Length: 333
Image (cartoon, rainbow, N blue to C red; front, side, top):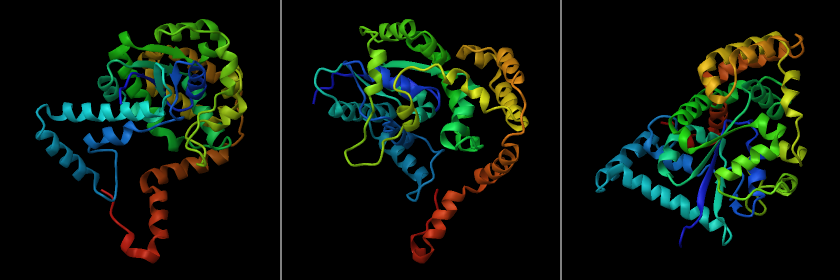
């Protein structure tokens, strides 16, 4: 099969507005979205990493075996990665209709392998989507926990993910297109024209009306595909509501304290790379009216989060469920 399409990778951390951006891009006839969040590159590229995976089969042993395999190839690891690249391109292409120029992969956890992807697909187009970190923090709680404290579930995104994306953007800024969620919704025609110019595609403002009909699908009859289902259902057109909605969620002392520490961890330099100002964000946070709403719940869930990060109760729960078949309980390594 000839692979003619080129990949577009939309990099962001979760809750940055990537589903909205994906739907607008997918409304263009020359951009195909194989599924909402393919994730396919993560397991393949993690076959070269010893850390980050615990499995029944013993992941570190797999990595050693892959290294041995690469040692018997003329070009070693680069040849192995080239074959991974070709496989993924063929799989993308099998989902695409004839004549489509691009396929779009929007998988937020690709922030873990962003450098690998950019080296593996030099012909690709790379969109970096930034959003006010305070809005991301609030959106994680509002969208996935009904407003309750849940940030311990998304530390890999808020910390490792942000750090990885900033470093990758600095290294490759000459060949990527950076956009901000705030600008995409405040000045959509101007910003989306710039994005489509980068993709070398004609932009028609009607796309901003038509994207509401785009709903990325999984296989027929399956459960809903990965992605922001609440956002898809709620927003059928560009809305400026999310620009200030976060302020309603960060008002109690615990959330303000955590958010200040988070902003200072990101730091002025990284925030400037992203297009934000540390002092302005701190001032905006401090200006919010202080409330005790959800304070007790936050302290309780925050304590649970500390314990869960150490003990990972989901794994323990699964092992307890398997007790009647004790021979199926294995070490993960």
